[in-house]
Length: 186
Image (cartoon, rainbow, N blue to C red; front, side):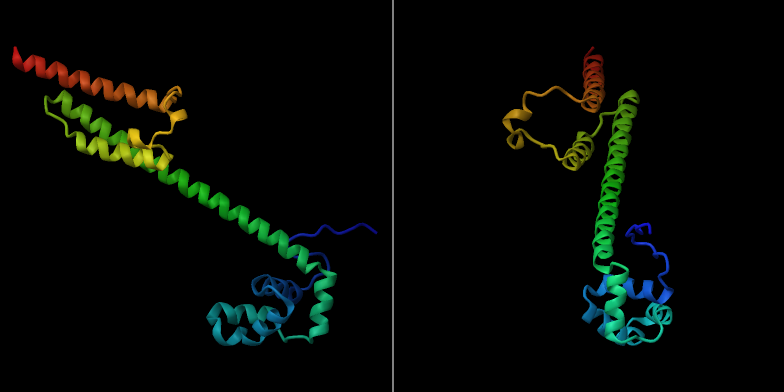
């Protein structure tokens, strides 16, 4: 007979009630707490609890729950579920961090474009805006915003392509300011 793979999904020959009981076990953490939660389910869990209670049905005796636990590998499945939940949480955290960094990078780019537009319109740009967004971007990247925060090994590393691009934009902005200042003096 082929061995059935342990999974967090409903297993072969597992009834809806047994699967719902396993889900409750995952939340409760032990058989004793599962039985206690089963008793309270319809009382203090609101509408969702009522729906879940209907899936669970009538609470069986403790030995039946113990047999279900052994037969359907509740302990192992719970460990797998915890690992899956942790992985999903890590992925969500990475996505949130990536999205936040992307929004800050877009803001940095918009401010840079505004500064360039002001320069082209013969206006003096406000460097404070540029500095604030640049610092936000550096903080999100986990990089220092001043020399006192630099580590010795950070001082002698090559620039990243993004840093080179921002350096070019900054250089162009400074060149434009100098050009305008010399143009005004003449």
